[in-house]
Image 1 (cartoon, rainbow, N blue to C red):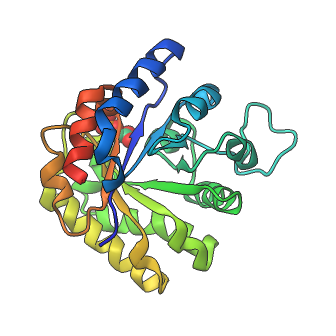
Image 2 (cartoon, rainbow, N blue to C red):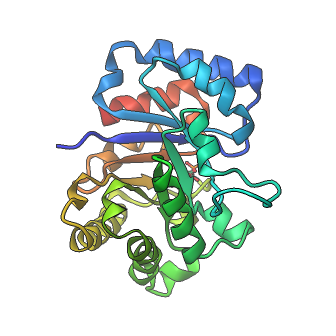
Length: 249
Ligand code: PGA
């Protein structure tokens, strides 16, 4: 059985002092359990150097929250995949719903970002998910398949190197979690789509995200096609994040 992945998404939160105390608390809480699942924290870009040094030699992997679709050059404000790699970044979120919504990121752009990450040896965590309106219109399956298809088409056989995060937009930061059954239903669809796309798709971890917390993690992670979690709010509290890791291990 593949290991589960628990990835924290700090979003635009943190500071030098707060980051250090959160990581110290996580590392001392992890101790022996760490090897039982993959763990990552996706942090704001300015803190990558700090986190690289805090995480050195630990079981916690470093993640970024976005990457440029361009390789380098005149793109003010953008961060290239090769730059992330310089700080030992192992994972990078691409296409988080907040980027799709507030920065107009299209399926095609997200697919290109995933390609850039892969080319630099970074695992893209490709975020997909439907809005409440799309769910209520019965379009959940159509939307998530379209979002994932863009990444599959551009990345060909390399798609087996990605991680997928299913995050229903209506569940993000709202306290409204998808029920384990609702999440499993979509994960099964995504699993089938990935298996049809690549002979090595079985290794792809499909995470659930959207108000996953210490209280509901066990049930969600117990579903057959849920291979981990992408955790926002609860990743900022060491005790909660450790409880979720324990539920995955
Ligand atoms: P949440 O965020 O856990 O706070 O709902 C998840 C995410 O946006 O990745």
